[in-house]
Length: 244
Image (cartoon, rainbow, N blue to C red; front, top):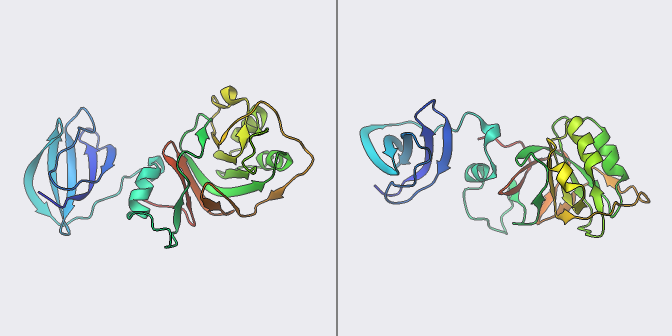
């Protein structure tokens, strides 16, 4: 069997999706779960089924025309799965894309929520945070606050009190082109926080900055009202809400 693509693996017990796998050549891969796994693969516009135990596949012999069905719980899928669906080809810098990926290893994770997404709201500031506080005082309504703090590593624009406020007010996450502090406490809060580092010194209040303007860092542009998806693998920015 060759030319296999778009393998989707589903645990036989309960039908829980446990992975999205791409393969080429022989159908064989490490087991995705300790139980037998049902596999759908697509070749030449047709789909077939097989079973695998211990990473070895056995054909069941039935071929039928059926599209690969996406996992039912799209909100639990990560940036890797979204890339498989919405960015299937290698990135070409000269071709505009509806979905952009931020630079690798630009951010570190600090909040306990490592996977988060939502509509973007922005703050642009430098070594000051009045608008960060003002934004987090609002009802988040599932949004993600993106703070362009000029990549400053001389002070923090987010601490435990503001992060706690954001979590209580329904913000999904905060992404900072700058530093946070009180990282140990933030790590216990139910909110996603990504920043480029930490610093114990708080920021000033002298210049409020700008609210809900386009900001660019980490190789992407964050626009208010568009969508951001973040997890341990990276950060994606999309013009519209992504579906699987």
